[in-house]
Amino acid sequence: MATNYLICDNCQHKNTVTSERIVFCKGCQKKLANNYLDWKKSKFNSSFETYVDGLNEYNESVPKKTVLENPIQKKNPVFKSSISSPSKTSLLFIATVFIQLLIAAIIIQSTDESITTVGSKISYQPSLTSNYLDEVKWGTYPITQTLSLSVPFELKESESVLPCYMENYITNHKSSKAEASQSFSLTVEKLNFDSYYKIQDADFVSLNDDYMNSPGVDVLKEEGLHTIIKGYNTYVEHGSYIKDGNEYLYENYTLTKGDEGIKIILSYLKHDDLLCKYADIVTQSLLNNKQVI
Image (cartoon, rainbow, N blue to C red; front, side, top):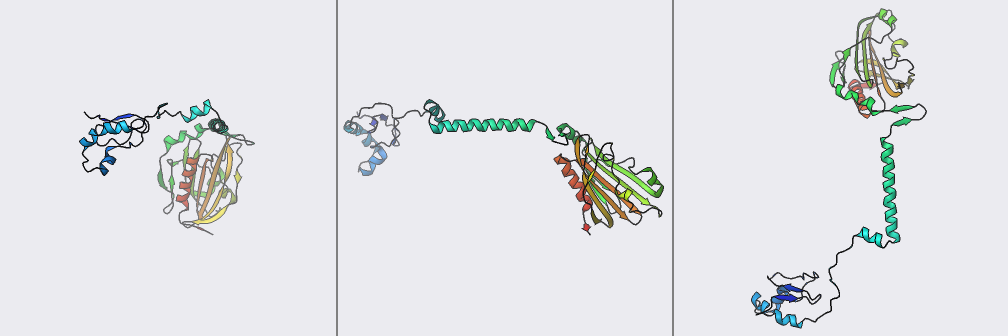
C-alpha cells in the first residue's frame, strides 16, 4: 500500500497528504517540491490516486538532512529583546518614551490648576461660569418698531440705571434687563426727552450699567465709533473692567433719533468662551443693516 505522506526536502517534515491542495510544508511553511498541483503538470496520467501511489518512491529519494532545531521558532518580542541585550538604539528609545511621559504628566497637572493673571491677581474659577447654563432661554425682544434684539436670557422690566435728575427731562421711560449669575448682563433703557434737554448730553452717552457702577470698579474705555443703526444715530463705546476679581468686557450703545433715546449696555465675563459667543449673537442682532459713517 502506498505511503500517504510527503517528506519536505527542506526540513524533513512528513506532511500527511489528504487532498490535492497540500502545497506547503506544515513544518517550515515552504513550498513542497513534489506537491500534487506541480506534479500533475508534467504527467500524462495525472490522477490523484496515481500521485499518492508514487509518494513512497519519491520519499526514498529525498536526501536525508540532520535537523538541528525546529526551523519555526517563536520570535521574541522586540521590547523584551531590547531589554535582554540593550543597544544604543534601544536605550535611546526607552529614554525618549520616559521623557515624553514626564512632559505629558506636567502638562496635565498644569491644565488642572486655576489660571491666575500676574499683576491684576485675577483668578478664573470654572464655578463662576457654570451656574448660568440652566438660565439660558433665547428669545427675540422688540425694542422699537424697527429694532429688536436676540437675547440668551429673559429680558424683564427692571429698575432704571438713569441718574435721578435725568428723570425730570424724560417721558415714556422703560427699563429692561437680562442678567445671569453675575456673568452676563444686558441693560436696555428706552425713553423720550423733552425739549429742554440736549439729547447728546455727555451724561447720557457715558451712562453705565449696574455691573460697571459697582463700588471699586475702574472702567477702561477704548476709542468709540459713530455709526447708523436702522435710522438711529449711534455711538458705540467698548472696553473692559474688573469686578470682584473677575475681568469683564462691555459694549455701550447710545442710539438717538429726534427726541428718542435708547441705551443698550452689554457686560459679560471676558474669559468665558460661551458667553463671548452669546454676546456676539446679541451684537449681530443689533448691528444688522448698520452703516458706518
